[in-house]
Amino acid sequence: MGYRLLVPVIALYEVHKRLSRNLPHGIVATCLDAMRLGRVPDPTDARAIAASISASTHNLALADAAIYSMAQKHNATLYTQDIDYEGLPGVNHIAQCG
Image (cartoon, rainbow, N blue to C red; front, side):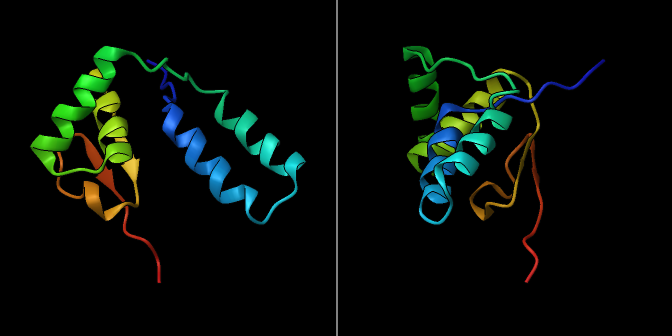
């Protein structure tokens, strides 16, 4: 069974926002294109409700809840360095160095 990368729309937003501060447009576009090689599920009303439930259940901010609920919907493992996800089911938290 092959693994497939899921890329939440909000992740594209966050990466674009951060990279655009310091990098030329062409490099930013290349990074986003690489992310788009994965599957980018459309945001839907059902995903918004699922994110709201995740936010309430796990005390997550909007973006974190949207990302987490999408991973849960697709039975995907969420790999992250974000401490807010630590200990949640289906999350592989990787501690940041330094």
